[in-house]
Length: 75
Image (cartoon, helix red, strand yellow):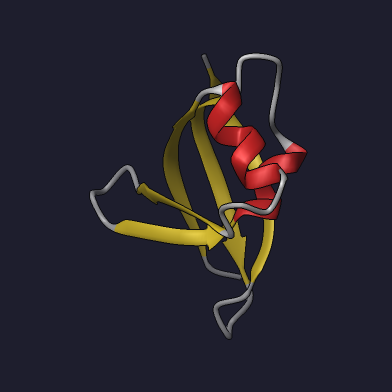
């Protein structure tokens, strides 16, 4: 299963926009500099009171579909 590590820094209001469906995807950079786009619903699993801040590992199927998100570091 392919994985990619990304830095995510979203404040609470930005997370709320994703959560409410006003924004469908999250666009961020991987730790190796690539742009990554994944479904906004994924951050629901890791959002806190201050938003989402840290390095996360995203897992995808062989066909490129999002499977999971796991915190590697949190700020």
